[in-house]
Every structure is written in structure tokens, then in C-alpha cells.
Amino acid sequence: MIDKERLIGQFITLTRFDCESFSETEIADYLSLELKKLGLIVSEDKVLPGEKCSGNIFAYLPATPGFEDRESILLSSHMDTVKPGIAKKAVRHPDGRITSDGTTVLGADDAAGLAEILEVLKVIKEDKPAHGRIEVVFFAAEEPYGRGSAAFDPSVLKAGYGYVLDLTGKVGTAAICAPTIIDIEIKIKGKSAHAGFAPEDGINALSIAAKALSETECGRIGDATVNFGLINGGIAKNIVPGEIVVGGEIRSTDDAHAEKLAREIEKRFNDEAEKAGGSAEITIEKKIKAYNIDKNEKVVKHFLSAAKEAGLQAELVTTYGGSDANNINTWNIPTIVLASAMMNVHTTSEYTEEDEMVKAAELVLSLIK
Image (cartoon, rainbow, N blue to C red):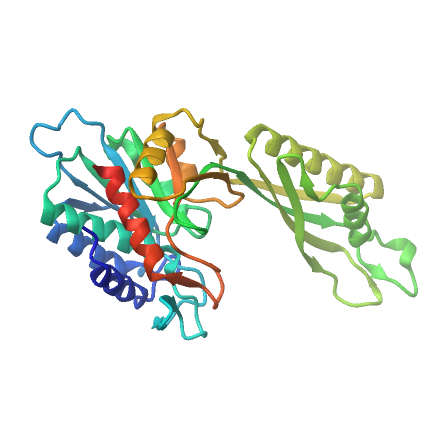
């Protein structure tokens, strides 16, 4: 059975590592050693640049003899945290909450998932329940749009389906649908001129951007969201701005719809720039691709059964956040994201709850049995 104090102790140990994105070497070394101690066969790739950046960790536990025909399962969490994540200090509270000291994130995103998977592997080593092949991948650099998983070689995987522990919310919640995320950067080039003496000689890049933006529907658009949140440019109040850069993003649970919206925005900015005698340099980059898992797929049915066995009220949701599951699903391994007992993520008020972490670990154990 799940050992609560051991689980929480493991979690607190993991939060002590300084592992902001692309700086995961120390926590990766620790995790590799822990996995080897538990009898897993462990390897690490070297697909990301940077002296302090680890590779992704892949490990597997062979099936119990006689259970080799049971379908393999994939479990995953990521090793990196967002900023501010240096010198984290976990604080246990009498009510069962664990927070940081308020100066950094806690790192429950995603140390909670890491700790829960490790605890389940320890239970398996101790209790020796029969199981099929268990595959574990701890990804680096998940926070910047799944960079680590995007570079991972999936040919080593044999799993028929998978679960990523990386969702906020009540344990028992699973995201079966997540969006395509498209990043847009638009550089409008006009012509600088003195706004007082010769404004007619200039081409106002800001006006071009404003016209294009005014014709662009932002906010929620059906299954999509569109937002422009960055603008930079200009050199003085009395100079016609010759260059403006605007940045935005599109999210949609329908990949084709996201691409259509991106093409429409590209055309709109190009048209407005051309009308004014300027130009537009537009960079459109798809960060991750949407997935939508049918409720009748095995990965969902197995989750629902395991949640019931663990005494949890299961809830299937759509999320507008991305995760490594987006990339895993492109490898034809149906994968959903499970709540791992992390709240207020990406803020210094992030927290977890000890009893919720135990529930998450119990759910993972039920998934494996």
C-alpha cells in the first residue's frame, strides 16, 4: 500500500532541486539513480542543448513472468519547473497543505507526479503484484511547450496507452482533450519620419498593426481562443514608428481550425501592410498539436475503472493547457493527463495537499494492477 510519509518525503526532496527549464541535470541524475534502485532499466537521451540541461529519462520494468502478453502502460511526468524556481523551500502545514515559503513556486508542477510514480514503483517492488511491462518517461523542458518530449525518440516505447501526471484540479480528473497552440509574431515595417515636420513622409507601422488588430476577433471563438498580448516598437513620441512587433497565440481543440485562424490573421496583416505601403514579416509556429481521445478508447475506460477501484469520483474534461501528452499522442500512443494534486501552479502561491497526493498515487497503482 501507499506509504504516505515516504511519498511526502520523496516529494519534498524533489522540490529542493533547482530545475527550471533547461537546468534539470541534478534532478535527472537523482531520478535515474532512484529508478535503477527500484529495478528499472534506465537510459537518458541527450537531445537538448545546454550544460545544465539533462536529456529525457526513459526507464522500464519488465513484465512479471507469465504476464508478458499484458499490454504495456506508459507513465510520465516532467522534471522542470517554471520561474521563480531557485532555492525552493517546501513548508508543511498542520492542515495537510504543502506550500513554498512564498518567494518561489513550490514545484508541485511536476514534482507531485514524479513522487507519485516513484512511490508506486516502490510499492510494486515491495508487494510484487503481477503486472505487464511498465514504461516510465520523465521529460525535460516540458514547460516551454514540451520541448523535451518533442525531441524524444518514441521508437523505444512499446506501450499501448499512457498517462501523464500533470494536471491541476481534484484527483480523479482526467483531460481527454487538449489544444493545438500556435505562436504568432508579426513584424510590421513602415517608414520613420518626424511627426511634427514631415508626417506625410512616414508610414506608421503602429497604425497598420492597429487596423489589422481591430479587424481580428480575439477572445473565445467557438472551440478556439485568440489573443495578442505583446507589442513593442517606436523610438519617440514625435517620430512616426517605422517598426512594430506584435505577438499573440491561437489555441484550439481542433487543429485544422487553429491553422485556419492563423492563415486568416497572416493574410489580414499582410493586406493592411500592403495598403499602407509597408510590409509584414509573419512567423507562425505550431508549438503543440491538439489531441481528442474518445471516451470509448481503452485508455479512458481503464482510467475510469481504476478511479472507481481507488474510490475516486472520475471526471473527464477538456483542458486549454498543453502537456507532454500532446506530443505522445502524435506517436499513436493514446494518452490522457491526470490530476496529480497540484494547485495554483505557475505562481508563488502554488500548493499541494498530502491526502490528495496519496489519492493520486493510489490511482496510479490501480492503473498498473
